[in-house]
Length: 216
Image 1 (tube, rainbow, N blue to C red):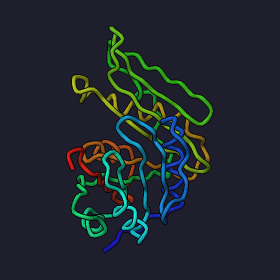
Image 2: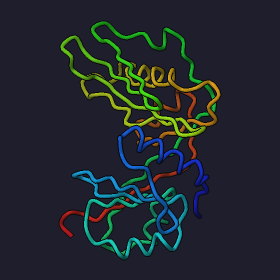
Image 3: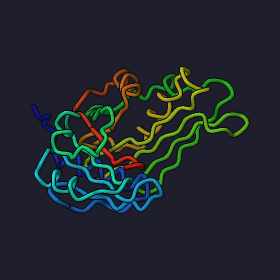
């Protein structure tokens, strides 16, 4: 059974993601959206909120690597639209939050030896936690498009995990979120999903990726 997500929300998420990453804005293509990334590891990407025949057609046409296809559905559904040369990754999780984060000062207090840097520029925010030696221990981005506020690339370095730094990054970025925003969205890994649940996020859908390996 297919999973239903709102394509309007997903387009807003993708547009905000492009803002956060300095990428071109997505354009309609084959019933989905295309981002011409132009990166060394990604020529372009396609996002489909729902499985459509355009997804099957694009998958048949593409024969080179570094062009991922993204579908807001299960790996089994995506597999049914792809030729065998495509490889599918375990799904990530689309999560949403409609409430303001708890921004209590004790939730944002840094452990000794760390400092927080928060920068905002128009509709994009960046947070970093650095050590006394200027090493980046944790970081993340957020961006707004219309009534949607998204969180992107929330990372904590392995040597600095289990200290609450990820929560501090999230709550710091949330301070850049307008009070009247309609919806907050992120895409989480299985590990990150547990953190976000503790902050009041709920599952919204699956986000499954496929790519042609370099050696095919």
